[in-house]
Length: 417
Image (cartoon, rainbow, N blue to C red; front, side):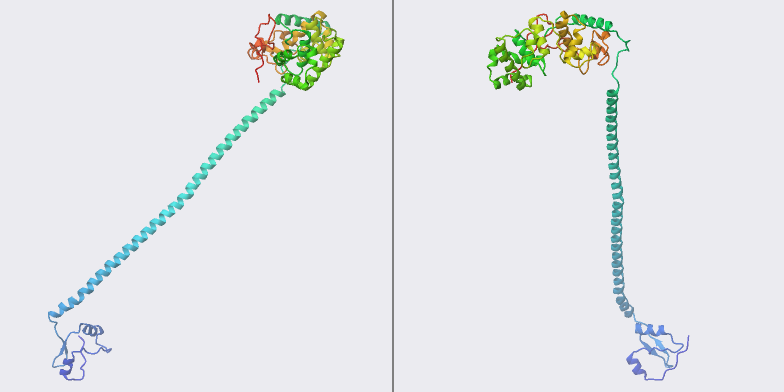
């Protein structure tokens, strides 16, 4: 142990009374920590006679006081530790909550694009499906249109090519067709209801641009009001128009009926003339109407060239003309005069029931082997059979009062408006 420097001698009583520790020194050999420890503990010191510093032992009360003093410090430290741990725990909890929230938000953010992507993908798939469906429909429509165009552009089925036909061969074939039609339609007749020549003349004028059925449904009321030329000539035009309105073109037809009635009254004593030359002078009466009246009211042979007769005459190869008078002349040169009236009825019957304008029933036509135009219409027998009209198709005819030998059903009267 280092030697203690001999301090100047002082009065022991004063030092002892003061109870103060030696002042700190920076001299070598003196430990600063020992001085500090002595100062902090405030231990009582004494001196020997040699002047050495002697530490005085603490009494039992001193450690207890010291312990009592230090105990609050330990408690405070423990409290501080607990508080520090609580703060740390709270910080950790807060940090964990923040981390969890951030993770949840991140997951939501990460999930949102995925959901958005899935929705976009679904929308794209639906759009693609819709586009495919539309494209398929368009393709189907296009195919159907192409098929229709091809079918329309395709040439109609024709009969096997025939050898050039001589005039004599054509006449023989034409007369054979007439015989075949006579067997097919032994009941052929004019399809207008009438009881005298005046009624037949009026009905024929009304039949222009309409059906015989519509005329037959209209004339009963008309003839009940004006049964004679004199009665009709005296009719009020508006009243007459109202009566014949269902036949169409009623104003022009009213003018014709009033004019021919007045002419019959004034020039022919109220009677219908029996000569073609006289009939064609009446208002609204042409060769077709005159031939109908002459052939069916007076028994004078005549060829009635209406739309049906002209169409079939060209299909049968009897003529190539379009004008009605030229067609009449060509056909009149093929058949004997005695056949003209009944030939007209048979051909018109066949044109209305079988050899239609737009779609002939070729597969159900008995004279198909004799027809150069076979194949222009439906050739399948079952399909062609469905195209037949009137009595051949199992439906009513056009006359409300047909002849007794007519095999079909009478036409129904017009329903009241």
